[in-house]
Amino acid sequence: MQYQLKITLNHTEPAIWRRILVPSDLQLSTLHYVIQLAMGWGNDHLYNFKIGKRIIDGLTPMGDVLDNGGDERPNANEVALSEVAKRVGSKLEYEYDFGDCWIHQLVVEKRVEDGDAKDGKGVITCTDGEGACPPEDCGGVYAYYRIVDILSAPDHPDYKRTKEWWGWYEAKEFDLAAVNAKLLERFS
Image (cartoon, rainbow, N blue to C red):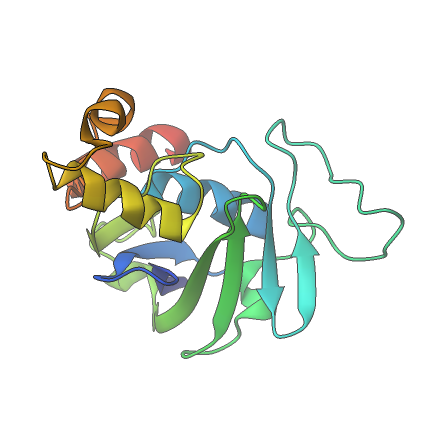
C-alpha cells in the first residue's frame, strides 16, 4: 500500500509544494529523506514531526538519535507513517531547521494499491510540485521573500550584494525529472 502525500511549505504564496507516492509503512526517518530530496533541502539541520500535540524527534544530519534531554518521545526511526497517518485526510507537520523554522504540512490525499502505481511496484516518486525550495540558511520564510523581492528589482539598493550571494536562485523553478532522478538514486 502506498500513500499519496501532498507536502506544502507553510506561509508561502504562491504555495511551494510537492506530491509524492511513498509506501505507507515507511519509517518517518526515511520519509524525512524523501521530503529533503523532493523539496530540495540539503539535510543540514535537525527536524521533527508533529501530529497534533505529539512530537516525534528526528535524527541528526549524521543519522544519530537526537538527545532530547531525557524526554521519552519516540524518534523517527521508531515510527512508521501508517502509525500516525491512518486514513485519507490525515495530517502531519514536518519542521526542518529549527532556526529558520521551515514548517511543512503533509496531507494523505489518497491510498494507492501497489499494483495501481505507475510501475506496479510502489517505488518512491514525486508526481507533481510547484515552486523552488528556498535556499538553505536564508533566514526563514520572511527573509526568503525579501531575497526574492530584491532579486526581482535591479534598482534595489541591495540588489548587487544579494545577486552575488543568491544570484543562482530562481524562485519559480521546479524540475520534476531531477527530483525523481535523486529519489531513484537514493531509494532504488
